[in-house]
Length: 349
Image (cartoon, rainbow, N blue to C red; front, side, top):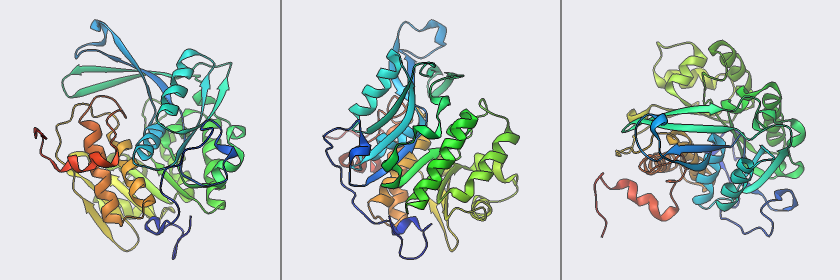
């Protein structure tokens, strides 16, 4: 990955963008060509009830997988990019479920099997139409035991973009150390580091989160966050989103993208601010919207689109994702992107 001006200028990315068909997608370290996107983080098994209402009344639960980072990787892969996932799973059926689903989405999977810890589990509840609530069972999970030794040799040095999130930093000290090491290695090899604040209050206190997230910013090139998460880090609720973005730029990132739900988003660099309109949509399942936005944005940059075009793609991908059930199941292939322009309720014949 190269830049004609500044290594933090994500719009100057160059390199291959099309997908490949590896002979062994489970062993990306054997590849000699570059990977477009590598993600690092925990992917859990997930259970979702078959109807709306309190979880205790569910008649059945559907089994899938969930993880912020892997959702981003799946989104990029569906849009034609070569994407890889690095993580830990337990030596159990839920871990095998994770492997099957990620491989089924054409990800290059580098998974360390931990015989001493279980695969994490997420229960998603739909207490009312249009609302979701999640319950995590991940304390002591295999994913929380990520270790720097888990990082595969050549993969990080060959990736164009590494993406991880504040969730990984919050899981454990070893996971945080692993993320830092992955970022340093990616940057040393000329790659770009993408990071989503993705604050989870159940994992750590606001004070601990603020310190850890601020400390990682000098290793980040492209930063994503919701407006609320950004304010939590800066401690300045009096600022506009554009001003908040400028505050975050001062810590190291070259580009900051702040999302604000139906109000859209704003992209902030040292010399300009770009507003992004949200795509009107009838949301079915809002979980995964932020990760879908990140996937679309990274896809746009990897494909060589302008910043405005990449952000428009991000908004379209997020809208299409939340219009269907599941965190990642509704992520679109390229031929579905134009559907985001149709008004809710449109019938295509």
